[in-house]
Amino acid sequence: MSDVSVHRHSSGESGIFANAYLVETARGVVAVDTTLTESDSAALRAKLEELEKPLLAILLTHGHPDHYNGVSNLLRADRVPVAATAGVDRVIREDDAAKERQWRPVYGEEWPVRRTFPNRTVHDGESLIFDGATFTVHDLGPGESHSDSIWIMAGSGERIAFIGDVVLHGVHAYTADGHTAAWLSNLDRVKSLLKGMEFLYPGHGEPGDAKMLDWERQYLVKYRKEVTALADGHARLTEDEKATLVSRMKDYLPTDRLEFLIGLGADAVAAELSAH
Image (tube, rainbow, N blue to C red; front, side, top):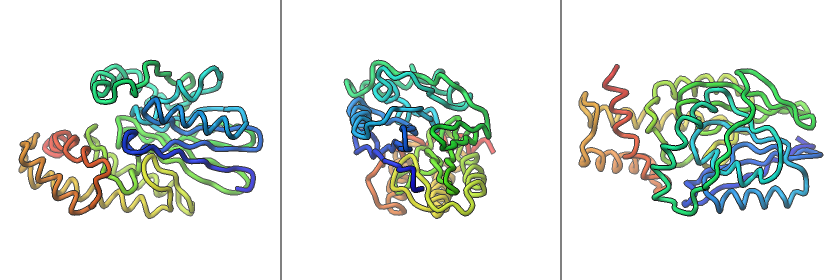
């Protein structure tokens, strides 16, 4: 788009490689997701200030802290919409305290003390317009998280999509919410929604084309297959079985990026598969 630029902030390992995006229009900036840590969200705010345009809105794709923890730092004193589907809003509010108890001991002072929740809820198919750019949300329900969504931006005859963690591109996947079957269905739905679209912006990893949807599908199918074989009908894996799972998934995707997620989600997926 000639009048729109997308600026990506890619967190490093300490921010679990989460992406946040600043969509620059002629007269303002719309943010999509906001990173995990104090450092990354402060860097995102600095990047916004370098653009010397006002923040118009923050759009959230889902309710995992690596995508909403940085809202407070990005907003500061700005009063703008922080928009999410009702499902994403619910997950953030219901799970925030538990997520803090789980992860503050790991992140310490990098875990934001003040976290800002959405102030505007949107429904499936609703569009918000900022400086001539139209952002339409699609509510996917459970998938990578307990409630996922994507935002499609249209303007100047072009369309691009911010797909959140429907794809964690080139890194190991978070499966601990236990909705891998729904996630696979969501990949089919998103593929249909984004038909003909050339560029997708994922929640983790490099932006690219729709081939990343097929890549994520193959990863999830492999993960489910290995959990099924190791669990043998049980709802949990032993520590030795989890170690085997890690080894097999790293053979499949030879990267250390988010390796800890492989074992983290094993029991949730074993329970999901044993229930069907």
